[in-house]
Amino acid sequence: MTAPDRARRDDAGVWDRHWAALSEEASLFGRVASLVRTSLLSRAVRAFADEHFPKEGVFVEAGCGTAESSSRIDPAGRTLVAMDISRLAVRAARRISVFRGLLQGDLFRLPFRNSSVAGLWNLGVMEHFEQEEGRALLREFARVLRPGGIALLFWPPEFGSSRLVLAPIESLRSRNGAPFRFFPDEVNRLRSRAHAVAMLDGTGLEPAALSFGPRDLFIHLVVVARKPG
Image (cartoon, rainbow, N blue to C red; front, side):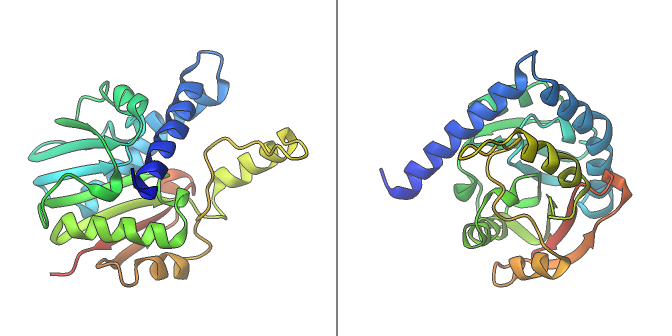
């Protein structure tokens, strides 16, 4: 097993533990997070998808988690596929009826042919990868996207509303040598719009739009990237 393969296996374990913890009935945070996904983020995802995605083709949620945030996407004319490295996440995503396919696998090795996908999207995924690893992931997105295809990335910034709420709680619950985090390490939250554009440089994707606003209550900087052609 290569070093990247071992790292992906470890990532799967980290995310399985994360989703297992949030699914426990005693997890207040898990219940609140689910409510935010189903009542707020799902509306934002549909709005951005309606605005930027083509009306037909194959579309992949690359890092779907529970996929609750995608439950309102209009599937008419579209083949929607949910993919995640976590077995528990894919199991949870089965409850979301808009998807035609569910896959467990490595986002760095998407099981799609070159230029075969009309659009990709995810929420709260990109910040978990160091910058160069994140660029490698964006290059993989560019590989499978068809010319003119869209990557719709809901990317948490340092200045997002969720950080304003969660960071003080994490600080209060942390102890010396044992920091508390609601999510696995977020090593690459966006610092600015310029940072978002820089992340796309050299990946085969170009910025089409950047949005930080009330649609999702300022939780994400939404990066709309296009494959030229």
